Length: 583
Image 1: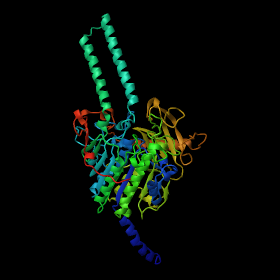
Image 2: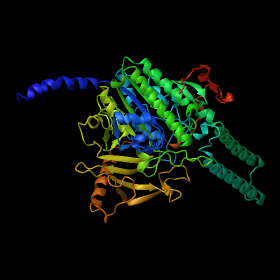
Image 3: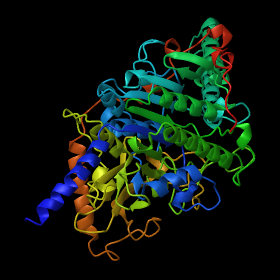
Image 4: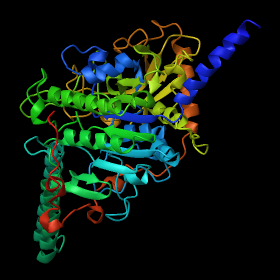
């Protein structure tokens, strides 16, 4: 005891200094859009150039089994910000479409939800979101901003409130074309059959229908089709706009130097907040289609436009990290990089160019709960706190960022709701060797699709699927006929008993287990089903924010910086004539 006492006295100030350093750090969060885990050099890619992102791995921790809470943009981002499965907040769809498509929808992240930005803001942090939001804008009017980032804890917003789609960039096709052709054709056929039937019944005397009624019926049908076509013809102006705080500054946005503009905004925010802790969330619109790259990056990669966009995003990460170093904030800042979900493997342009990313060895992609859809990059750097070159193979979730940074900021976790994420600091600092996630639940929209189980007394990681998507063509790696995979009906195959894999031995999910090949098959399924039962009991009924009613376009909610007669056009951004530095 006498020998240990001097040692303890010596170590006490060191421990105290480390604990003081990890109190209220600044936080920089990077989130790519539709990036595959196999796109980055630090996860094994040898043909894409991502030196700045790879450097985060070398200087910090790499999570090799980092899981997105959903394989789609809107629900994944809702879970990331709240630390909760998206079904708990109503941010998971019961229909085919699982994300917001229109700026004039009434659904969005409920005001009752608590984001990490809101908790850090209450602790005195300056908070900013640069880039993509995709969690709703308005509820009842075009300027109530009930779902807006500034109503969810961010002091500053510069970016895209909805999504970057092919329809936003002329010449890049439309995500609606196939559906529109099918539904308009069906509507016209139904209308024609109804009109002909009425005319025949009227002619033979079974029904008397005044010609005026037939005329009104035809007129109403024609007007509805016309309004629909007019809306989608002007989709770009109505939905693809850039905002600063509550003001629209460019409608539609200009892709030229867009990533450079995001980068400059992030750098300025850091420069304004060098003397106090801040939270900066940079949510890139790259590498979601429509793909784009600034002039300095076009044609420079080995992977055409997708690679150009990826390398520009990597450049942006490097620029923002460099500003932290310039302001001597390196050791006071936790940096995190991830993607909202896996790469969109079905993204192929009209000319046949592959415009989706690479998920490495993992099966499937965006919109599926196969590993390629949910296993994402997870990189964390904090010099002096995280050991350089650390690799953590335990299951972690993007929901874990919520409790991790909330605790670092000195805030308390909400006690009136379930938080599904767990603090990563014990794993990152080497204090704990195992993840607190014994179970992770994988959702396809609002439907529980699969469960991951990491038993406390084993290195095994089991994954059971209750249904799997029907790939088309059947021997492909995605749902190419529909552009994305759907979650119910004839789009999936149900499994009873569940389809079981041991990810620790079969990460590619090639070899489903059976009672004949796995002696503990029934016991494993029983444990997982009990976990599902307990999890389901923890879910409270909440309004569905992605219901058809909440997702429909509502003209009175349409954000517009000029007038409908001017097709909502404005360009205050270019008028400011901001000069961007050379990339």
